[in-house]
Image (cartoon, rainbow over the protein chains, first blue to last red):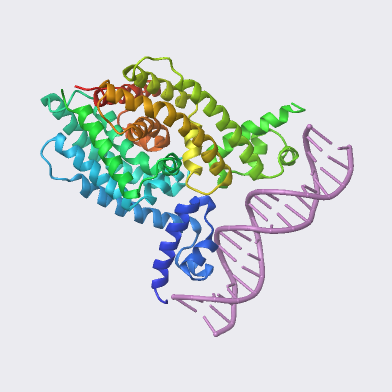
Length: 206
Length: 206
DNA sequence: GTCTATAACCGGATAGAC
DNA sequence: GTCTATCCGGTTATAGAC
């Protein structure tokens, strides 16, 4: 309950409160309460709410993108094998970190400097990765006739959009599902199946 | 500049500020400044920030869903004609109201009562509409062999997700597009084309 | 209806004891 | 490292003149 242990408790609590309330809605007092420490303790480790947010965001997204890049290194031969493998990995990954897209989509439309930093720093890196590898891979596969001729950039947006929408629109989907109640696991399974089905039939030549 | 005119100015200003800053980030003073009236005037028409938000949200989403339902009444024969027509209409509609998905996705993950109300009131209605008409339409089209056998609910999520992602993830997409600069109109055209292309090839039987 | 002035409160941040 | 007590600026909301 003492020592640097507190710092970790603060980080965990802050992440949780920032996710639930958003940056503007988050209260330092609530973070302190959740961490089970005094509010002043937060200021012992971080000099401001901004710095706390910035620290947590950077750290979290750093770990996120590290995981994401590993995930994209899936060893598969052709696009027809890569796509379903990626969808499964991506959705599983997001299902284990559902708060990430939630927080991102919430803060991204504002002008919070910490988020702008994340956006440009990490996403620029992601785009370089995508454009030097995936974009070309799609283009070549199309020229080879392995997949239909498609707009590579838009195809990436399609895949990412299909995967991520479930997590950014979750509260809406929950309302949808009130009338068709199924388990969380079943819902995820169906979502993955439907995405892979659509993409494979939509991309492979007939 | 006087009379009830002020109320409309307040509504317009409030909508803009709530969209830009989110509920928690919005300041009554900023709304007053933007409306070109005094802060106290807002309290002459609305008794609290909550009530102002609630009023504007309910009103806006009421108009939104009215438009949405009209849009879904597209007179088309089969699914193969309906889908591209819907995608065009939906994206055009969102492009003219980009602040709606922005605000929705921003507030939806919190617990703001006004948003919860919108969510259950309007989306329940939408779901009834979807499940009594679209869901069945997809199911029948599949049985008729007009489209491939697909999970109807997931197909709806796919279509909506592909359309909406562009607006909920816009700041991310802008970062993507920094390296491939094209005009707004061209971007929207490509987005629509790619979605329709994927859906048609992915849903029509081979 | 519209304004000025101000009350009342809240929340981020700090001082300083232990 | 951890706490109590407190400051201080900002924000919602109201009182009351015009």
